[in-house]
Amino acid sequence: MQLTRDFPDPARKGVVLSSEYRQEKVEEILEPWTSAPWPAGLLSYSIYQDADGDLIRDYSQWTDEEALDNSGRAGDRYHLYRGSRSEDGRVPGAMVAVRVDTDSAELARTWVDAVFEALERDRNLPAGGIGAFFHISTDGRQVLNYAEWETAEDHRRALAANSGSVSAGPLWDRVRTMPGVRQVSVIRYVLHATLAP
Image (tube, rainbow, N blue to C red; front, side, top):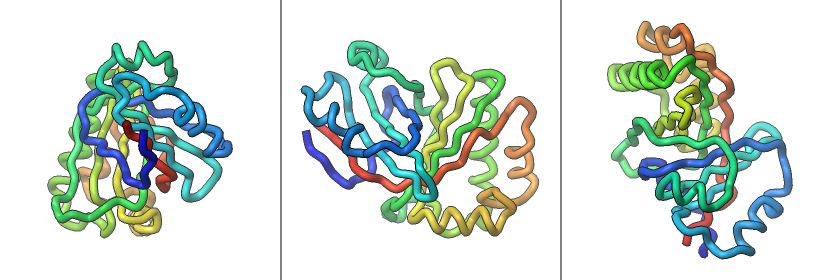
């Protein structure tokens, strides 16, 4: 097992387990992972600290549901639905976790597709955005956008310039006001560490 300061690759296929905690000592969260044998099927385990407050988010990537079941780990399970990243080689310095609840799995996919349409047609996206990887929970009613940014400050500036959204326009209005979709949280994180086999 190796401990690095490298961000994981959210484009990996498989199952993601990700949960949010009130601030605890990060080392206490990492200790069970570093003191026990590496679980079969675990690809990476990352832990992030809230850039603006007292939250911690973990993000673990597993090969499949069976490996996660056998690990005995609990938390919110997600599968990657869609993702994209800039091809200019920029490296993330922050991760923004955008959590959304929806009325159904179909609506979750429709909402994510609407975000991608807005991103693809927007010619005025703010500086600092690198990638967006949308995960849908196994019950289909939660969306987790793992958004890569150069810095947390870049994301702050983008929201401040666009009334709480990364950009503006009719397609973004559709994203913000889609019936049956409720924004839960938008939290900026910095990576503390990633564990890998």
